Image (cartoon, rainbow, N blue to C red; front, side, top):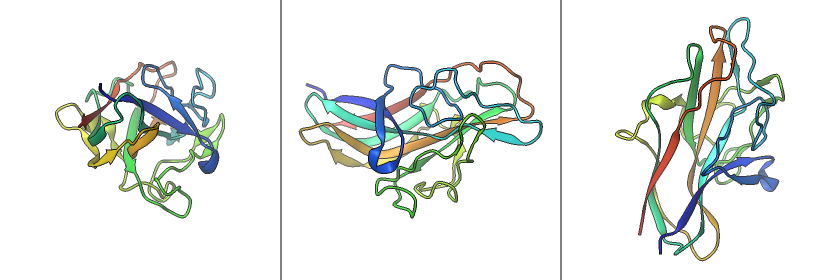
Length: 191
C-alpha cells in the first residue's frame, strides 16, 4: 500500500503552529497569516511600488498508508503566470535554522494584517536556503528541487522534506479584482 502524502500549509507562531491540509483545496494569498483566509484581507494595489501578501509556508506530510521512504521532493508551477499584469509570485526552499526560524526552517509570516505583508527575502525570513525566485520558472519539465535526500516517514504522521515558501506580490500596475487561480504541484519518489 502506498503512503498517504498530503500538502500542508503552516501558519501561526513557531512552537504552536497549525498545519492545515490543502491537498485538495484552494489556498489563498492574503494580508494575514490565516490558513484559509477566503476573500478577507486581500492584497491592496499600491499607488506606487509593490505590496505583498503574507508568505505561505508549505510542506509535505505523510499521514498514513505504508509510511514509506519519501525522497527526491520537487515543486513546480504550470510555468505560466496567469495572474495578470503587475502580479507575480516568488518562492524559495526553507530549511535553515536562523535566529528567528525554527530548526526546520519555519518562520511565521510577518506583516500588518489587512494592510501589507513583509517582503519575502533572506533578510526577512532567515530560514530560507536561497534568495526567492519567480515560481513560474519552475515547471513539470524543470521543477525546483526541494529536498534530494530521503526521509523515512516512520510509523506515525510526520512532516517530510523541506518547506517551499512563496509570496504573491502586487505592483501598482495591477488591475483591481480577483486574480485567476494558479496550480502549484509537488512530486516525490516513494520506496
